[in-house]
Each structure stands twice: as C-alpha cells, then as structure tokens.
Image 1 (cartoon, one colour):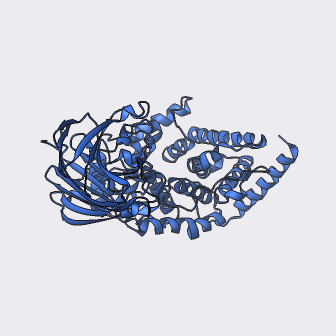
Image 2 (image 1 turned 135 degrees about the vertical axis):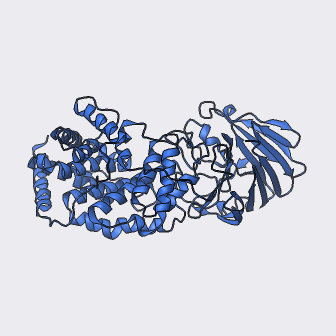
Image 3 (image 1 turned 45 degrees about the horizontal axis):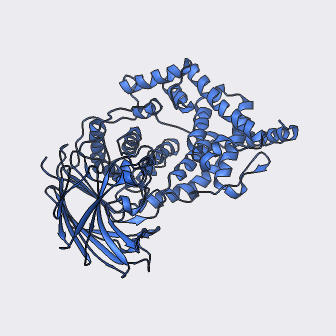
Length: 566
C-alpha cells in the first residue's frame, strides 16, 4: 500500500474515531427482540443455521447480521467472533481494492447493496462493541463514513484519493427500492456510531421524504409493481429499527403499512401460492409467493397498531403456500411473530387508489375467480406499459401478461399485456412515462366482489402519437369479466384488442376458447380474430404463451371473458 495514502487514511480514521467517541449519547442502534419465542421452531431453525456457520459451514447468503442477531438472543462469544470476522473481511477487501485504485464492492450496482453491507457493520459494531478493537473501529469508521458520503454526494464521491463520481440514481426518489438501501445504510451507521450529522440528515431530509411520499400512496403497494415492490420488506424494516432505536413511529404516520397488508392479501391469487404480476418480475418471471413477500407482511404486521389488519396478516401468513421461510438467509425474519389464527378480509373487493389497481374475487375459497385491473400512475422504471390492463385467474392463469412466461421477466411493452395495442403504420405506439391514467369504481358489492369500473387511458399516450382518446370499462359479475373499449385514433392508426393466454386458443367463429377461458367478441360485428404463438418471435425469451388479437372496423370493442365452472 502507498505509504502516503496509508498515513492519510490513518489520520482520517483517527479524526472520525475521535468524533464518534466524543458524540453525546443521544441515540443508539436497538432492535427489539423481546417478542422472539426462544422455544419456537423458527428460533431453532435460525439457531441451527447460525451454528453451522460458526462451525465452518456457512449457508448461502449468510451474513454478519445473522450472527449478531443470534448473539442478542443467545450471547455466546462465538457468534460475535463470527460477525466481527465477516465485517473485517468486508472492510479489508474494500481497502485492498481502494489501494489498487478501484471501487470496493459496496459501490457496485450504484450502491444497491450498501444497505445490507453497512447494516452488517452497524449491527456488529453495536452488539459486539466490547470485542472490537480500537484499530478496527477506526478502520470500520473510515469505510462506513466514506460509503455514506459517496451515496448522498455522487459528484463528490471518491475512494482513497481517486474520484469515483456516479449517477446518484434515486437518491431523491423515495418510491424506488435503491432509496431504501441508501437509508438503511445511513440509519444503521448513524445509530451505531451516534453520528449526529447523519442522524440530523435522516430526521430532517430523508425520513420526512419517505413519510410524505407514502402518505399519498393511498391503498398501499408500490408504483414499482409487485416484483420490485417486494423491497418494501426493507422499507418496513427501516421503520422498525428507527422506532426501536428512537421511539419515533414513522410507520403509523400514515396508513401505508396497514394498507399494504390489505394490498398484498387481495393481490394474492385464491390458490394462495401466486400474486398479481405487476411490473418487472426479475427474480423469477412467474409471480410465486416467496420468502420476500412473507417477510414484507411480517414486517408490516410488526408495525401495525390495527388489530383487524394484524389479524388479516396472521391469516395470510398461516395460509399461503410457504408457512415458513424456505431459504436459510431469510430464517431470521421468521423470528418476527406471525400471530395466531386470523381470518381473511370481509370484503372481496379492494381498490388501491395510489397505485391505480382494483382487485376482486368471487370468494375467499381456492376455486374463486380473481380479477385485477390497472389504471393509474406510470412513473417508475420497473413499471410496465399496462395501463388499462386486466388479469383473470380461476384455479390457474386464464388471461395474464405474457411477461410471466418470459426468460427475463422484464418485457414491459404493450404487446405483452391485456390492453388495446395501437399501431401506427405497423409500428406499436408505446405508452409514455411519466403519465397518469385515471380510474373510477362506479358500482361495487364488497360482499360478492362484483363491481364496475371505468378508466381514462388517454393520458398514457403522447399528444400527436396517433391515439386521441381511449376509455375502458370493465364489469366483473359471477365468473364473467366484460370489457368495453371506446377510442379515437388518427387515420393512420389501428387499435387491436389483445388477450394473452397460457395455452393455444381454439377459434369458433367470433368465439375463442383457451383452456377453461371462453372468449366472446360482441363488437365489432366484423371482428377478425387471430392468434400469435410468442415462441415464434424469440424461443429463448418467450418460453410459452399465446396472444389473441381482435381487429375490426369502428371505434369500439366489447368482449366477454367467462372463467368457466369451478
């Protein structure tokens, strides 16, 4: 290592350490573990996972936080020894890369992993402080401070003496999953080190931005969709850590946490193993309930003060296809209590006005028909061009975005959604971002789930793009969804009504069958119905699935979709 660099780093570390030591004891990192049942199966599974790591066999994704968490519950020195070793390795690796003029791993992917990496450091610093040497504290402080500084000052970011400017992606967007990671890193370090500068920064700027943003997202959920929206598990964890450490209850400053429990329960398919596929699905394309969704609801339940909502959460947690975490690195989240018993919501209809979604079902039984409809803000990079889109499920997918059958899970275009596809001289007209469509539920029966809604999708298209207007009305009654479109286009633009289905459709006049789904085209009278096998476009990307295209004259479509018998 360059001697002058080493000297400067040592001096900087000494200054940072002195500042930390001299801080008034106004804050401390605390995570309340009093609700953990040490006799539960969840605790035993977690303890066995950490013990395996302590014995030299760490599972995939094992972290210092796992070891430090168990130390809080079972204070054996071997757990802190392991946590300290893991953090020290992280910091040493970073210093080695910095000395070579490179960015450390914590800066990778625009600092996306800074949250879990610095929270590892922060929790270990707090829980295992008596076993951490002064030299380690100095080294860890320098690393953590530089990371936090770089996150919030992208143009002044540097490592060592070398500038490493980055884009600053989403440092001012509370609706983006990166923001939660940045706040997580800052919060854990600020609380562990009692750094008043960063604490003030959080209190006055970054946390108020979160509560203000989600205070407007009535109905819960995320404008990033249900794939990246699962990152709210980290958002809610941030709320919990801040509450436990400072007594400030950010979660109940608005209704978003309670609403999000309702959102996810209603967005879950009747079979309780899948969820509404909204936006990018990058982890796996098929939207299967996973540990992340379980953690999200566990975190939300731990924050909620509404007993009815907590009861709904308990029912969901005990009823879904994964009644416990499936991956070792998620086991510690099952330490959060799921409660007992519970029951589903009384209403079979739910409207999330902030995200622009309506979910309805004919029953809470597993053979129920489920419908989703979308019309609202299109403002996030992981959202899709699905304004006006619908989904129909009964036992399995009947009409659903083709995106769930793709390799990537990030096909965003109108051509893969159940919308009107507008083509101008053969070229698809894209929905524009940002834009905000509107929806109104004009009649509803919460007891049966039946409803009617209208949506104005005109704002989703730029002026002069060929789409002058588009209104869509839907009616869900019994096991039938009726879709009615009216629109106006320029002379060189054509509208195509499209439905994406998982199986090959069979044409019967003006009617189609795709598995259990029966589709009847009522308007236009001169409708021409065709189909496309997506694999014919790109077999590597489109693994299966078909699209039904309906063309015809006039400016109106009226189509009935019958889910068939249970």
